[in-house]
Length: 162
Image (cartoon, rainbow, N blue to C red; front, side, top):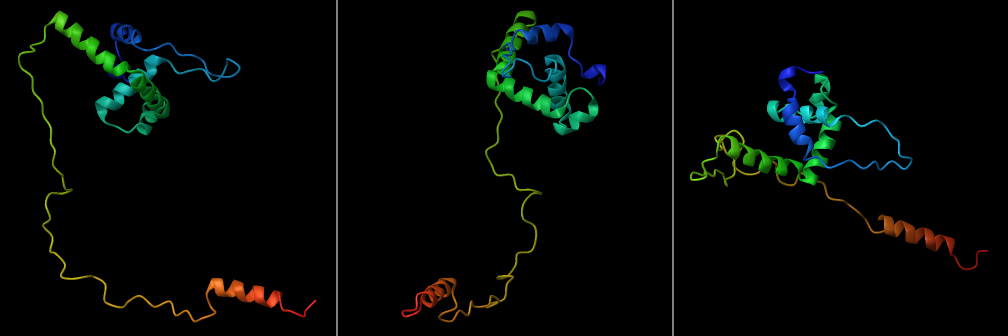
């Protein structure tokens, strides 16, 4: 297991469990590989969100396999678990401490962000390719693939040949 600082508390996990839908086993014989615990997957998901690491890097931590955590993240996202978590957590925080809804702020950017800033390199003068570099196809009559097939057909169907 990973470090305890990346583990969710028992109280938070109980709160989170109420949001997760019950899993239905879809294996045709009712068996299949044992499912990784929801707690391990939640720890892995929160580790990725806190550290910004890639899902595959989660394998080295020992918390949970990255592919399993990513699959569970997608499953829970489609089920609306994280949206419900946000709404319930905001409501709970409002009950305990109180939210000041009189001040709201919104931030966003709608511009193109060029990599490395603006263009500060010298601009080329004209094309980098010299004129007439490509060679013509130089096909003569009777040398295309279609002409070749027609010629073979004519040779096969010569009148008078048996």
